[in-house]
Length: 358
Ligand SMILES: [Zn+2]
Image (cartoon, rainbow, N blue to C red; front, side):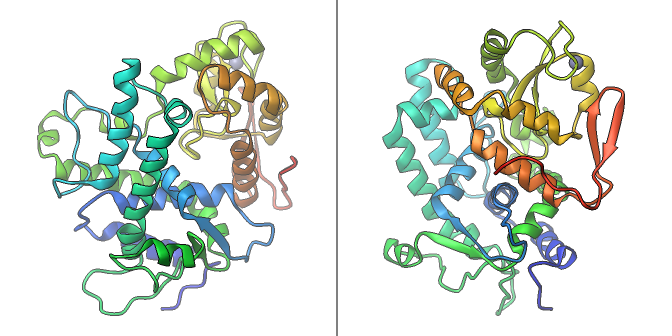
C-alpha cells in the first residue's frame, strides 16, 4: 500500500502499526512520534500539501523536554525506559537535570538549565540527536522482520545505525516530511497523542516489573502538567495581571490554567498560562477555547510576557503558542467544540480560519 501524505486514515493506520509492535525495546519511538506531532502542530504550512523540513536539533530539544518529567525518581526509583541497562536518551536528560539539581537543591526547570547551563544543555542536545538518527528515526518506518520498507513520513534511506556527523551535515541536519505529512500529522495529533501515551506507559510497566504491584500514578508522573513548578508562575501572573480569573473575572483564582489545553499541546510557557477560578478550569477542561480567548492571552504582549518569564527562569514560548494556535485551529474538523465560557460552547465551522497573525 502506498501511503499518500495527505490521507489521514492511511497515515494513521501506519502509525498505529508502530504502536502495535509490542516488542519495542525502548520508549524512544513513542517519544519521537509525540515530538513530531508537536512539531507538526506548530509548523502547519500555508500550503497544506507542502513538504516540511524538521531540524534535528529542534526535534532533539523536544524529546529532551518530553523526557524531562519521566526521568525524575518515582518513589525512589529511576524508571527504566528501555529493556537495556544503558538508555542513552533518558540517561542524558537525567544527567543534565541532576547537574542543575545539585547546584540549586530543587527540581530545576528545563528553561533554567538551558539558560544557566548552556554547555551541558548543548551537549545533551547533540547526544540525543545522535541517538535519534541512529535509532528511532532510522527504525520508525520499518516493521520488524520485513526486508523492504516503505517510507511514509520522511526519506530514511540515508539513515542507519551509524550515521556520521558528516552525513548529517550533508543533509543540513534535517529530515524532510513528505508533501502533506506535516498537515496530516497536525490533524491527527489530538487523536494519536493519547494512544502514544498509553503505549508508553505499557512499555514502562514492562520494563519496570515492580510497577505491576504498586501501580502509582504513572500517567501523571510521565505526562501530567508539573503542578509544583507551575506554582512559580502563579505569583508572577498574579503580580502582573491581577488576581482575577482570566476567563470570567471572578476574584477567586485557584488554578494556573493552560489556555491551549496541556493534553493537546505540551506548552507550559508563560504565554499559555493564565489564572483561573475552579469553576472555569473544571468546565473548560480539555476543550479548545474560543480563539478570541487565545488572542486575549497573546495580547498581554510578547515583550511583557518574555520579561516576566525571564524573571522567574520560565519559558515564554510566545511564538510557539501563536504557531500552535494557528496549527491547532486550522486543522480541526468542522463541528469541533469551542469553549467560550462556562455558559456556552460553540463549534468550529467549515469556513473557519484562525483570526490571529502568525
Ligand atoms: Zn472563572
